[in-house]
Image 1 (spheres, rainbow, N blue to C red):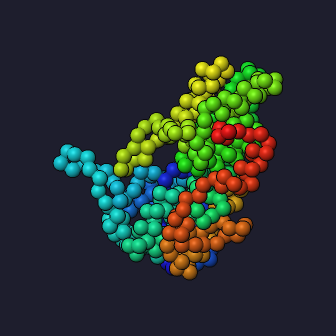
Image 2: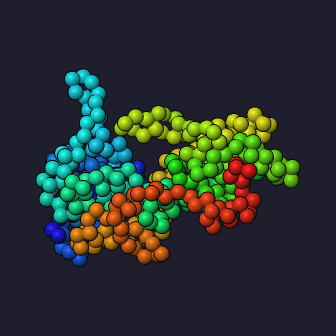
Image 3: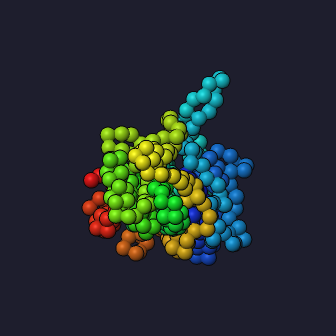
Length: 361
């Protein structure tokens, strides 16, 4: 193994730089291997001159605690559906073969792909074309199968919990209902875990369609007991029973629909029912900033393990955390079933035990 590449795809997540740092240090220290960073996800392979940069010890010095990614990311960089202008018209084309050629030109013995569900699906498709791929699971949503946790999730969870703590005091002071809209497209892990940790009274997640009447019933019950405020943790992907997810922008074959607005919808319903309500959309605050100690620890273990897996030529596989240990498994197996909140799991049972409503009563 003489040269490996690293790219970061999809949305950014705290811990990306920690993975890069660990991978570079392991490659150089253990295998005397050259490391190349690919800029802006898969797009970097389309730019032979400026699409990559050498990664040595100096390049990764001081980046452990930095959020984001020093390589840049492109969450619209799907080589199988790339928008271009031809004869004055916008069309979608497949440039995956060009990506493969770009990888071959850089003479990579392995390519470490740090990404979420979409980025890793592309990685698997490229692996089927013969690219020596190693996957590293990254997403604040924690929705990738095969691993107990993805790096980035713990940081997002801590930020969301702190926000709930802060909203608690102002909601109580002004006797208001405050809804906080959190990320989590189709998986409610951030809303569920932060809601429990931050003392939410109602948690709305994509896995459980909610009824507005049930949400209102919980707030009314608290009010009748003399508790004149309530906190609602709402996953951006939550939807009402019989309804659809709320989008701020529709998507197409390249751009996924942009979720947003369900928190406002819930708050407006509560307001019309006679309770003063406010909404806070935490948004990209959850993605940015310094990663927690746990995310740095996990990301570092993932980065080193990914290089070791590459040295063993364990391609088309993904590193993962299972029972506290770093393991690896086939990418197609990890991606076969997206991870969702277990509605019969301990976390859900505990939340209901302590009186949290999921709007489904």
